[in-house]
Image (cartoon, rainbow, N blue to C red; front, top):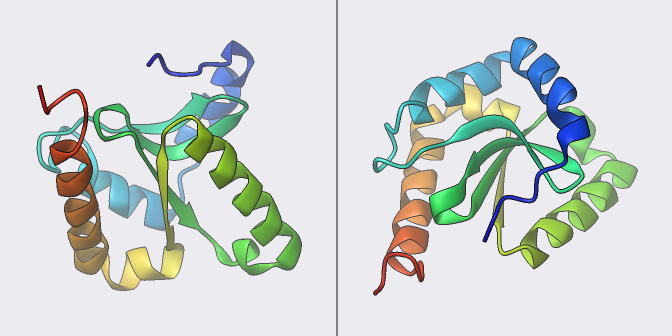
Length: 128
């Protein structure tokens, strides 16, 4: 399945890459350059009408690092709808708070490894 790319989001994604938060930079330092099970991740990647924090196409996995604003009722509902739309495209969305990333990066990486192992093992692309 092709990535669902919307060209108009490209400039916004570039701007977000230049303004990464401390928690986003920390997580990126642990998953970039195929460090996590040899899988390629992309940061601030446009998909459908959204820009996701991190995308791993081979595992159909999206990682979101959420700040405190994601705890507001209207944002929770927006995130739920967004996650549902991405799920309908076949993606799994994992959300971590920025606080979790900053205070427990090892736990976050271990959770990602577990999910990646499951998704890569059960992927129709790898189980031929």
